Image (cartoon, rainbow, N blue to C red; front, side, top):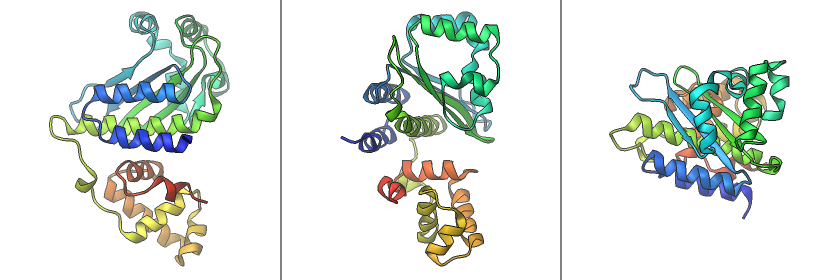
Length: 251
């Protein structure tokens, strides 16, 4: 089974997850499927919704105890996730932060000593709404499964969306595709091309529209979903089945 098919299977499962425990199990399974040993996902709601921060993880117990008691404030991964909009490997931390402090170096040394070797982190931020981060890690001397990093990034985004839906819906039922506003055909046409990496100008040429009209359709689609970025629009459209992986990935 291809990596893309594995991601699609994960999306279908996590979209229907009834609770956070189910998401936790699905994430542990996905981590193993894509060649990692551990994962950790945080979600903090910032809309005024009275929801406690969510932390899902299968990190080693010894490491979780160490982080809880003394090390958390020196985590360079969290600092880097605030400075980088792009996913990054832990080996790139010195380049992102320019220089690690001695306490940050000690933090990473302790992580390795407690079973976390190489890692890959995806910052997850919806401006004004929610914030979080998802990390995948290997143990021992196992290198990062680099062929799986794109899949890990997708899994992180969809798991974050699933957690957010559950947090905001509690105690009511989580929204379904039918509960959400539908994109118009023209909005979907524009989003498909944007998802394939086309500029507004190229999308306009292909659709017989001006770049300004393409931008308008995308902005209207973002408003319908209540998101502020094109990336989050694509994630939600994929998550709720209004955009298919085959359409988005086709060249």
